Image (cartoon, rainbow, N blue to C red; front, top):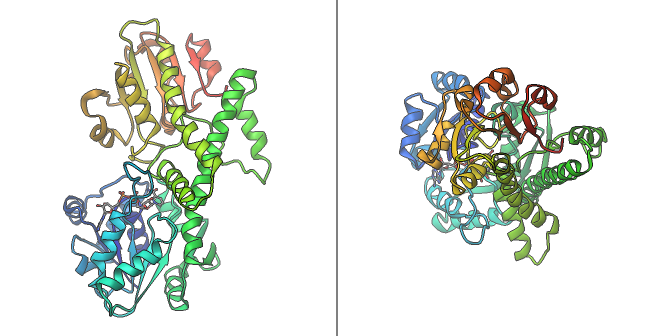
Length: 432
Ligand code: NAD
């Protein structure tokens, strides 16, 4: 199948590479010339495990190409996928639809023959109708259907998730469009759940899922607070809860709050949509407020650990919003670092993949280390903010020698508290 993908970000690029690997002829379009130039030159523009190899393989096979030209990517395509950003509006916090509307308008004039336009971006309910109207207005003769094809990939596992999806949700209002999507996902037939629903249901499923997961994280964080006061241990509580198949054991790791480019914006967008429709979403609103507080509380916890030290040096391990990615958008770590900077803290940070993206956000307000031991050298407190596996293997004996004061605030519960205490560390975990 000939596929055009608009937007080569964290969703568009892995999707394009994945679809090429399945044998489709893919053209990725982005309005950012620097991204396209890099991709054309064979340089991958974001970090995802396994993406680089697959990217080179498919470029070499001639199944994927990159362009800034909408015409080149859209004309002749059987399917055009919209994967542009839907960031929060700066004032209302609803999903800002300017990129979606621009993409729909720009692609319209290049549609040739029957084409399915699929929205993969996370979009408010009713967006399919708007995209349809924009295309028809610009090109009244276009023969097309708009479907909702929400994306559920996890950053850090985008390639794995592309080939092993939990479910594929398709919101299609016509049989013809449904058949095009069925053809696209034929390789997954019998291997995953494929759910065909109304377009508006598909649009809602994405927000409902993300908001639910955000609430689950907020819930376990509040339980961790409770455990800290009562002497219960959050890991044991979470394990006991997770064995109940109605609850499930995932998303029960307490931490510094949820983050990333999806949960914060999608919970706010869902809350906005609910208000617009006269529905009160008390749980989602509580999670949004609680999560904002959470990051402030974590920064406070770090500052509290060094309150008696003059001009303390804080070592931060982890800047990305989670492990396996270089994405720092809405990263709890970045918010905590921001709060610490506001309080005048002296920070040296290390992240295995996200130093470049973090640097674009905070620049020289912090110092960057080449590895974790360089970051903690002469530090007065070590704050672990992202759950990278390599931090679990931190040699605590070496850390004890390198640090000026032996204090750890482990916001991801990666280290063994008993071992840390034996080595003389003052250890603060989460809900432990
Ligand atoms: P991103 O910001 O990484 O990428 C978007 C890309 O679209 C950018 O490269 C931008 O230059 C390009 N773009 C914007 N307007 C364009 C236009 N008119 N023509 C061509 N290119 C254009 O965003 P992302 O993280 O990939 O997210 C995309 C969408 O997918 C969002 O709605 C997001 O909520 C959703 N989503 C993201 C994830 C995730 O893990 N990142 C997961 C599921 C769903």
